[in-house]
Length: 226
Image 1: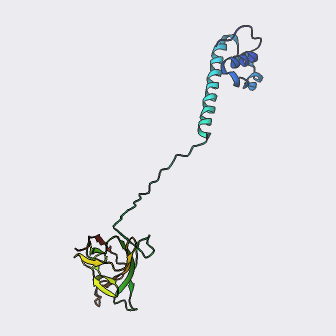
Image 2: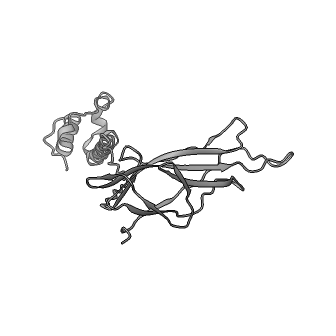
């Protein structure tokens, strides 16, 4: 915007021009320029060029202020989404759990039977509820306890019911509940697991370390025999 000849002094001309161009920030006036001889700087001959220079400087100031607001504006936190996969199994024919009737085993340990660690074993009580007396049990896969290229030997799984112990294998084994309840059959069994360490040879490889394996047992309800 061009200034009019009605402006009495370059300093006022500059101030009014800034007001017309920059609006609310027109109060920013170069007082130092006025002290250095504003009449020579803002003469009629170069008033347009100086006005453009002031406008450019003000535009730079406005841009800098805008960027400052941009960089100093509060940062809004982004939402984080997490997922937990859940399962719930409902069965009205058979239910397997710990003796509490609700939970199940996680990672368990086979414990040494003596200080020489010639064998390892543990017993896990399991509670079986079923609507029929008869069901089958079997190992889905043979139990293997391994550590790299080494494997424990003579791994065995057995089921103790009413003081009778039977070995559990990959062949289906018929079981019969003997403790009747109003809504079915409910009984606690003992699942026994044992294994021996690899053979240690003098001067041989180190067999120390953790041996791990998965014990997978299938419980299959079946109808009572006629």
